[in-house]
Image 1 (tube, rainbow, N blue to C red):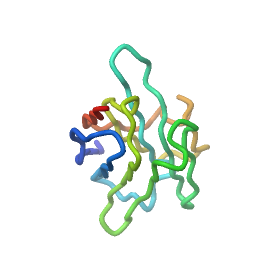
Image 2: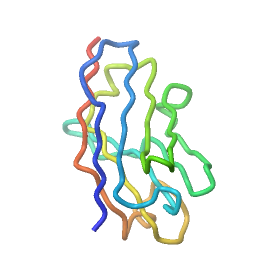
Image 3: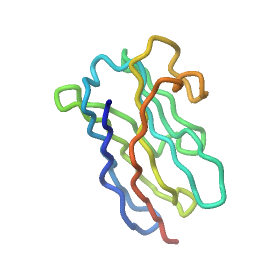
Length: 126
């Protein structure tokens, strides 16, 4: 069983920054797809950013230019640098990872055999 442990959430004022981390118990180098998702109260869970095994990245339009996903394979850790935070970024943020061969995308098919972290809360006040 793979464990993903998120950290780095907190409360910040609009315009501020936070960096989320996700420590994996399995090699991130061999992961085919890792990503960040979020869920705000009363809303559906949505994809935020993805990174594939080759370092290719995808970001949701709502965070493009503000959030950056990265990973440090030497530490088996995934990151999400969040800048210029807005009140609408308030949500529980979840790390996901899969080691199955397949496309790296926000769609559920990518994550059929993937793993979830427990989540870390981000609250942005305006």
